[in-house]
Length: 266
Image 1 (spheres, rainbow, N blue to C red):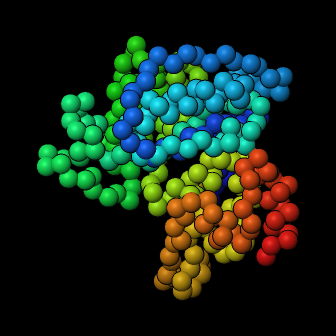
Image 2: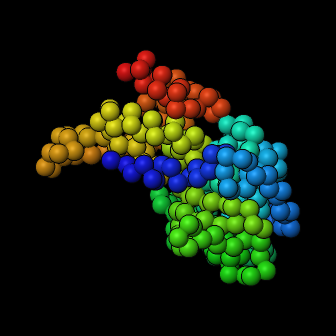
């Protein structure tokens, strides 16, 4: 069973979050972003960012990180059109390897100009991780690691909890094969996602936020020697298809809507 904490970590304030999914190449690096004005809501002690400002920061960060990734989309509270945002969350597919020197021809991935090798999992030295590690190591950089509530930091190939000029930025990395599920989960909202994964469990299948949808080819979860397989979810449409639900627009993805679909679509 997928722990609820894993599903809920990406929204840690009542205001929701901004997500960006990254997949593009060859963009000019942009620096010097302004710190966002913070607006405190009565219902939370965490500063909230007005949607318009969150969109601007998300777009600026997108420009900065595009050289190290393959594609960028925006989701989360911005995609759901929420008026205030808690965190800026970036969900990305990094380019493999290390960043190329600025003098190298665009797109060259090795000494012989060959294409980068295909990867199914983010490499420990993917270009995004290397770039952000270098930034966080520089005390003059706007990028810094962000301690959690108990003072621990998180900086790995898949999860990075950061700040940019004090604004909370969470960076999540995945692959082409799992992009649809990752984007679906990071769009939220959290209660919608919990209902979706409960529905998968009800169907005797197991959804992975960083993967696809696992099912049993032979046997069951309690069967010795059970054979498992996984449906890949390269886009959100595939997730809805596997659920047996019609596509739901991001701003309609709520706990109540998910509960309704669970009652009416079996």
